[in-house]
Image 1: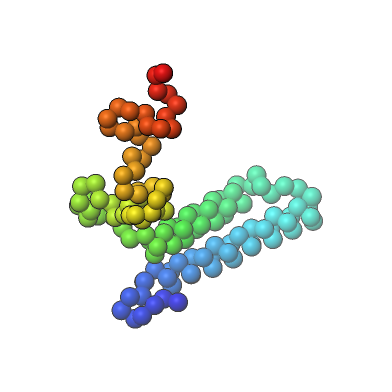
Image 2: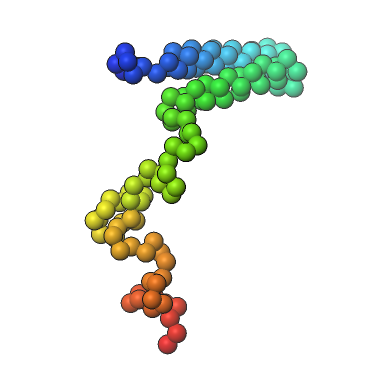
Length: 127
């Protein structure tokens, strides 16, 4: 799950631990709200203590998501990529030489040709 020993991500265990804490807190909040709603016939949603615990659950979800994002996406460091080269390759979903795809050789990217002609399929040419 975490890969070879030399490539293990140190955030995996922490991310899993906070995910479990978040799950337990969310289950506890659901049980408390359901129990008070059924037995006391009142809404606990406006209780300040309940709102603080719910906010803590939201913060746990956010921090767990942050750890997961750090595991998937490496941090960006200024100067990491040369000017204009973000490592995206030829375009979205098309490699060089694929006819009709974005990034295909000779593709103008939806722009009119540089010589001013509208081309065979241009509908805004003056006739």
